[in-house]
Image (cartoon, rainbow, N blue to C red; front, side, top):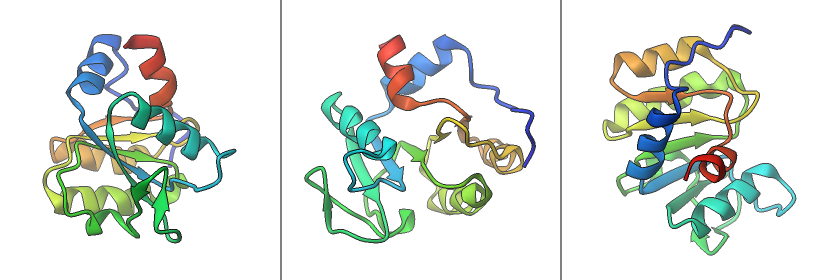
Amino acid sequence: MSCEINNIYTNDDELIDILISTKSIAIIGCSPNENKDSHKVAKYLLEAGYTIYPVYPKEDIILGQKVYRSLDKIPHKVDMVDIFRKAKIIENIVDVCISKGDIDTIWSQLGLVNNQAMEKARKHNIKTIQNLCTKLEHKRLI
């Protein structure tokens, strides 16, 4: 991981295109705790009309949605993967996204940067966003 953020999708027009074209979002690390950012963001995205798939190692239901133990267990098309886990495991998540073959965008939340993993995703034609909040960007742009 590098402190320098290598992010080719920071143009507002590109972010708008991503946010408009996205219909379904897997929230990696979606907490059942209402005080956690991952929960607040998932709730906002659900209320904004997105289909969300919470990914969390416990719980069966979060925000009224079925919880999946891992990204590869989601049997539906996922347009975006929104990551709320430590930067060092982003590469593992990218590998699963590549193997699923139908993920359009990988978005890592504020403070999460893994240039090596995101470069790997881009080489597989997956759009990448790092160190930005989907909720804040959606509120700002949409």
